[in-house]
Image (cartoon, rainbow, N blue to C red):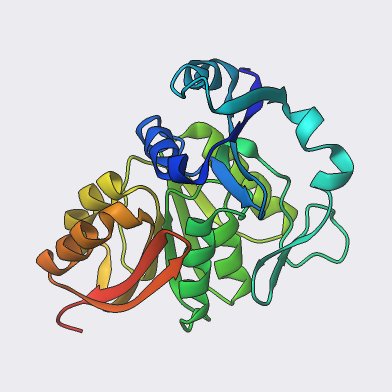
Length: 266
């Protein structure tokens, strides 16, 4: 198994967007967190050791950065502290008094990233009880478990990464929730129709997904797209409309966006 590390970058505020663009190009758009105080900005990037080593040379020598083992940065007591995911939903990795149990999995997020929070907030605006849910790009399984805890009758979680499949199964088991988990490249081999579809992935993949949705939606289905950075907002909005969907709601958190939309004939 490849070793996971954390790269801590201390950029000037005017360099943040440049660094975020580089992280997106490297496929790490969902693997970093920004911490800002009045005196300092930190960007903490989680990933495999060899990938993070290559990033060290991408930033100028005037930008301070350090590569650390996870244990030095995020020790066990800190990892076991509960934290608020969104309003009214707590994630707690300690299996006592749990609302959502989650063992932090660095490769697939812990619910701290804006895009996951946006998807969850949009999900919380819907009537989920007794509905059929499809979670595309399920990652750690947080949104799948949240759907079940909101009363979903059936949840199908899919991802093209075997580690994500195993992580979602683990999260479902920790929460005593029955979730069907399947390895699939987007909707390849997926049949049936769903009341709510969630996709928390990057815009190029969301755009590939849009024309496939017609095979799994109902006339009144609700679709949640998240993982959209501000520079892709307008093009994503135009693509959703182009494929005959009505945008019902937009959600923003920092520079990240999500959409709630339905088929135009609804």
